[in-house]
Image (tube, rainbow, N blue to C red):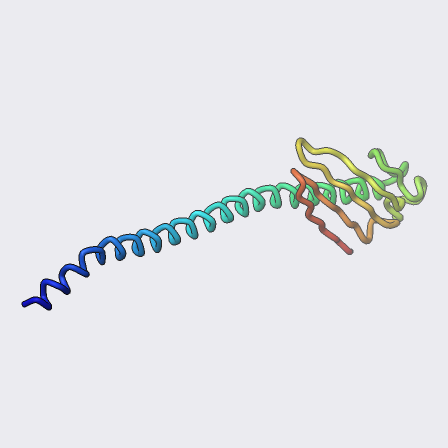
Length: 136
């Protein structure tokens, strides 16, 4: 009988110890999930910026293809903003060069060779860069 009372006396603080351990585990889980959610939120924002930068680069490619098409119309060649390689021979297309422009909040930089057979375009938006290379 003495042993039962004695063992009950030493077990009074066990529930407090278990509750502290359980609360510590729950706190660790909540902090871990919070860290994951904050990281995912930042990544999702970056993906939106990436898509906008990609479409900026695509706009640069389309612009050069359009200007090259204008340079290949019947003489006199070209009526776009970029110079044609040979204004009297419309089969040669654009002269090599670089071009950059803002499109709303995004921008693009394009470099191309003679006849626009290789076009490199970089789109920029909110600190995010995406590049496209086209060869034809």
